Length: 202
Length: 224
Image: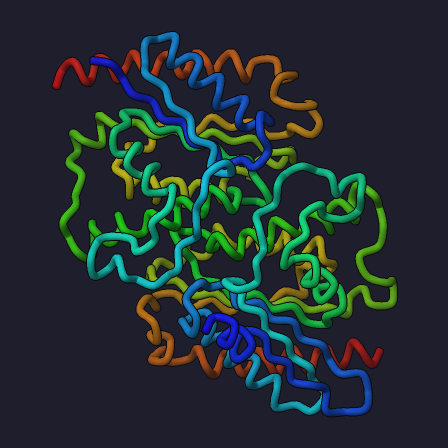
């Protein structure tokens, strides 16, 4: 069974540190036999959540744009990799826009109550957060994580790990980091092999 | 229809009623839901501030302010300006002119909502000015005379629901020359449906007290 890996880049900066890191993960996954797809949020048409709470009644979002296609792809994926640089101690507005729009899934789970994910479903769906930050601060990624956790819970992926590298300003970019791209590529392959085993057993 | 609503409710300006330089308050309603809980909190603060003669208030709703996300191009590190020409262009001058800057925002998915994050990220132009180009953000005599307020609401009742938003808010105020100690926070959790904050036992009184305290402090500092 072919593992499907979806990478979503929330960086507005094409082929910068974060997207390069994501590409390494996806390369590793592809080499391990996965079908890989990548979406760059800054390249698509989307609007932000209106906070109208219409989804609390219907379970559906009233906004119809490219985010619908992304959510459809997320539903098909076995591994979801969310990537964003850290801007002002948080994820980018683009990625936050996608995450805010997942409110309809939260509504389905907790208000409309027509959606739930079994422990088996969560185990078969692995979610990773990839990020880079210019600053060397140790806690520079910490404030992004609660949002990422909430998102993975919403879309039904087990939050399986973070691949994050800080201090990019001093290092001079992810390509100059001694291990980042290699280990991330390896990780992409490992995850696919693990998912193959899990999916073969179900 | 939209245009009418825009002029009616989005921007309103209470012209200075005193002859002396008024205290300039710039307020952002960051929520996409107009008249919701975080904006109500803001309106309470602004109503209390507006009852003073020496205050000029401008309120901007981010849902209609046309502020794109930051491109991450870092051009501002060289140009000392943003290459994007959108709603933020006029707003950045207002940010620099204000004595008190207020952001109100809802917490969505454990973080500040996307529109407010776009505003915060666009303040990168000030970060570049301050730390890369090493130019002043405000004239030296205005340093320490600018106060910030962050107002937030969250549907979740968890006490830690605001924790992840705070560092981004601090970044914003930091680069626009509002000191950490000069930021006040009023964050109300467990209010989800529109209007829920109206039933909160202390939110309105807290908002009014914060308005009074902030104006008193500003008058003191501006007179110094």
